[in-house]
Amino acid sequence: MPGPVLAPFQSDLNLPKTVDVVVIGGGIVGVSAALELAERGLSVLLCEKGQIGGEQSSRNWGWVRISRRDPREIPLMLEATRIWEGLDARTGHATGYRRTGNVFTVGSDRDFARYEQWARHLHPHEVECRMVSGAALDQLLPGHQMKLKGALYTPMDGCVEPHRAVSAIALGARAAGARIMTSCAVRTLDVEGGRLAGVVTERGRVACRAVVLAGGAWSRLFAGNAGIALPQLKVLNTVMRSSPVAGGPELSVKSGGFAMRKRADGGYTIAGANDNTVDLVPDSLRIGYRFLNSYRQEWRSLRFRLSRRWREEAAQARRWRPDEITPFENCRILDPAPSERSLRLAWDAARKGFPVLEKAEIVQSWAGLIDVTPDAIPVISPVDALQGMFVATGFSGHGFGIGPGAGRLVADLITGAAPVVDPHPFRLSRFTDGSRVAPDPGC
Image (tube, rainbow, N blue to C red; front, top):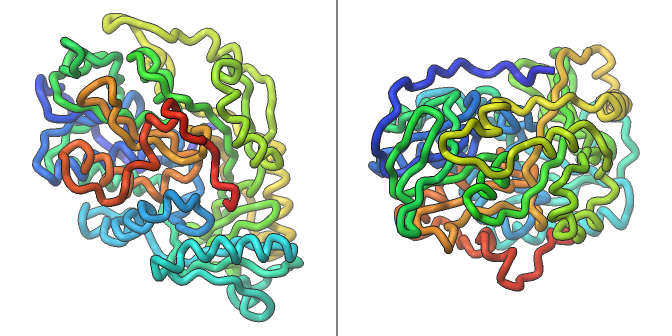
């Protein structure tokens, strides 16, 4: 089933021979990095094998949230929020960003205490985040019919229209001088004497001194062909949108069986709050043991299955030469089928929680593949073994909102500027330097 209808984006036509930086991937992180780098005066080429924002960057929930994040991500998310607030003016195009607030509901005293404990992570940053209950919660969620102990409320959280935002940032990057080419896969890196010298695309070679791999769910495959070990798997999440309906919540809500946020068109984007599908694939055997801590923490929200993706990924080439057709050209856009089970459970739970939704209907559904790491935080890092190579991937379902901050951090790393936040938690080497790799247990 096709994903969201994307804002039109016209590709540049001529492949440059030389640039300062090549960005691989036209999702939220790739276009944000291209914007940052171009505004700093570097020549930039962004190559996207399919369409700008064609995969998970347009298929996510559209939340811009600091609430319930891994504490290691909080400083970067603060920066991302500041960037979102100025992006429309900066790019000259509408992203759909608005500050609405966000609530995570709780149904037990235990969860109330756990969420209250998490809220303390924001106190040093002077960000308002508090537990609400009773009449205060009912005022935030008019018409709800849920039996709740309370909710974690973060007024600064907001939302964006994903199908507009990625294109808007890409247009801003182009206006700043970046070249952006769609339907143009990067096949391989060109390495000379142990140093990055360029890339080979399906349309020819481009010399450069730095490359940013922001390929989302494809990043591990590309990295592996380049000899870079990147532990990353995929998780499928199913989403739907409803027709417009009046009287529902204005802020974003995550409750026991559903998550929802109001769209600019008056409808709602709705998904299962704790229902993600993990397809068993050959990489599950190769690196699945690295994810055991994550599986133990998130087992209630994961549904493992053996599907046709095993055959599809087993048949994919894992090594190829610059003159060979790659998996990125054989599959321009990952467009997995949504889970009918997830759709049914989330829609039933959302209508039970907010009966006003009985007046609406589902007008579209889709699914996307999320790039996840063993500790559920991203890699935003140079590759120590290959000078000039940088990775920005593995955002583990938290990437859309934090994307502009990630773009700024990777631009800092490339240009040698003082990093906007400490990059140490996001280093690639944490998977090999003996560090304990696990999600934060409080999230």
